[in-house]
Image (tube, rainbow, N blue to C red; front, side, top):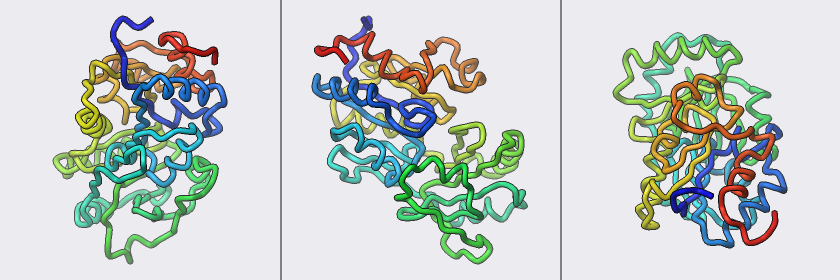
Length: 273
């Protein structure tokens, strides 16, 4: 049993609630449906775009609060847009004017599509149903660079670290950044973070961070893991994240239904799931 009273359950998606097949297992679904019936407030907070994420969380079978693009969008359980923040065109244009290695895939996450420098099969595989399609563009010909999120991906993590450092040399006051995965570097407006978005939802619902449990596996989860009443790191999370938050417990992996098993063991469920 948990020592403190938990009323809000918050989870990341990729590497956390989703298994390596990018889907929610039947067991995890059954546990969350039971928790919903017990009136826990359930929130999903992800780096994914809202169109993409909505098609995934619908499989839970009940309405939830959804935080997407690392906090740039908040949707209510009835899918009403509660909060929206985009990066200004000139700020992104300034970054893309840098000499970026053409091997790195560059993506602008727009409202209806994502504009990309090239098709990336690995990134496409994260969408089982392509409801949020990629459009290949030449960024040299683009006029409007405004976007929800600026995203870079490459199999070599060190290449992305080097790019991150170059960008932050002149843009650290404008942008926050995160590695949602070692191969995924994301830039958002400085004001955007999952923890900031979660605070807005908690204020609406009348809860505090101390009443939350949060599950995450990426560096875009770091602030929320630290802010939650109980922050739990997935066993499959990068070792660097575990070392940065040594005071937090590590649970089993996403492929072992780590989130659902923890909740089933620690919270009193009225039915056997």
